[in-house]
Image 1 (cartoon, helix red, strand yellow):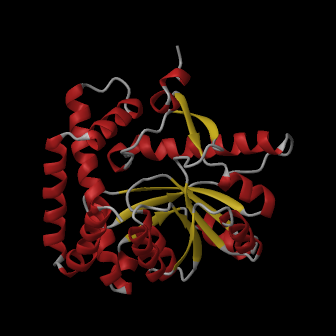
Image 2: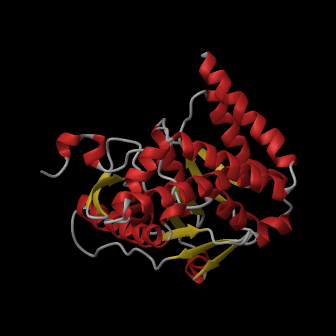
Length: 302
């Protein structure tokens, strides 16, 4: 392990061991202080966040984009402060920490016994939403995690999420899809963060007027298993309670090849994600390149 990897792992370890012991108001102030300091430094992540917001809020002035990126960093650090503290939260605190609109799509889908795929973008705190599902609704689920470097950091994330009641599979290795399909055929729940493709096999979608690539997995799982595919969007407001919405099901088209069906369904997911992101852009924590024109300028529109 490199010195940089050891430092990264140590810092995350310090966060999980120390921040979770802080009183909640102290953790909130600490997160905001760190966020504002990072925003003022205008590193690559902040610049990328601002660039992404410029696509989401076309025509925004530089002042508006700066205001959004500052709010975005505060939202991002709220996610981290909550995540560091979640293992120490009581069941009651988790149950009171989230509320969702149109939850009936999920509960009715699970009652039907055919399995449900929840697909989310990087909005607000998806870990809190997951902990709420396992704690408040009593529904275990399976998810996939990107293999982080160093490996010890990935192990920390897996242990953290498993401690919240989630089954976590590695994104790489090729066996995740089969396991997810088995869980769905058994009537289970699968939750996937699905607004950024981590492979070369993603589906191209129109996203805020330009081409991005999103994972095919949610649509393929729904097609192959008969599971219900539900987009979910999350957001923060000025209260300690996170908000969310379960969107109507994304249906499998009646005709077309598998690739054509996957394209239509993934575009429907992208459209649902876009509504939530447009309503609450500051809660979209996308500090990486997403659009093809940013990933490879040669593929951008002329």
